[in-house]
Length: 468
Image (cartoon, rainbow, N blue to C red; front, top):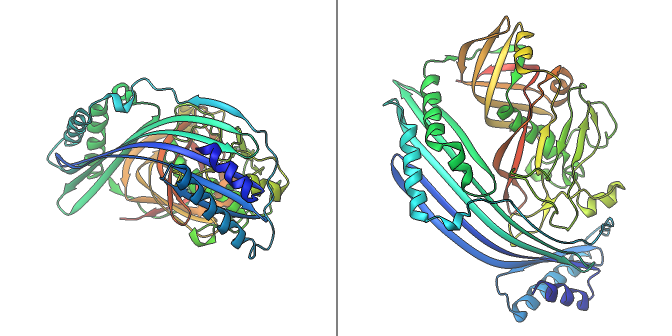
């Protein structure tokens, strides 16, 4: 069926065409305060066809996997591309890439379909119960997603790539209340792989720790405003920071100004080769790391994945590319294109984006910090359209005095500009943690994609805001 689609596109006169034939199994479970609020299994199968005609793209998807249905989808994609070609100022060119023939799969020990759905719901009721470590925890939430995706990619250049992927994650959240004060704590556990992650992790213990964290924040002191403070950021907070102020602005379509409607330009457009940070600022985007939410070996254009160097020792080195943007920039394509399902056209997306490790041990970094703040666990971002000014709140923080962790703080955010913060980074620890981030949004219609983000502990300068 997939080969039939691209053959039809070629017969109609497409310069290039590709097709993604996909089968999806998706299960969703939500438990709140002891009750199952949602228990859903979705299955779907379909094909998405992309055509390039007279230098313009067309796209159409269908779940009618008959020759008649596929032929109709190809005809629509062809007509859309041909009509669009009358309005494209610069015809699309594709950077060359090898046409691979491969089949690969995510390593899985426990397939999510091998476990009874009802048994998983019972387990998650137990996880939610474990969040309630005391009467002060007034609400618990467990939100689980399991995905099983089989994808076949083919194109008119001869590529034929099959990828069997499985991803699972669960968000645990506890709300604690004391008089009029409410505090929340959230943790996400997940990976590319099977249900075994929850068995290995010990989810009831994780849930109890989430409950204790929420409860402890009731006794924490509200943060106060401090200008130009020394801040030590944990890998979970760094995950959101790198996502917002390095990952998104490194997508080449944003660099070209094509995503401006969704906070989608970037202040460093045209600055490749310039120093924008300290020697401790190195950032990669790497899809090839097994066990991460952003894992893949080939993107949705059939380009072989590799580690992308975005920033190296403070110097802006490169962007994430499609074959189209690679041709515009005169570089090799680097496997940056992905779509959430066959219904959507691929976009340039992050995979696993993270700050590289440094040469400090965490204990040494603390000891060398005379006065500052240990800022822990991401909460909410607020970023301007160019990803220049940023404010990101945290779930908790601690004061650091004379190299020791002291006062527990709540209701805190940090704010700075991207170049000011990058240039202030003077230490990074020697271990990287990549956190699961399953809700990266981009595109219109919106595609919420799963990625990995993180890094080591970083030390730099930022303004502290008390946000209570």
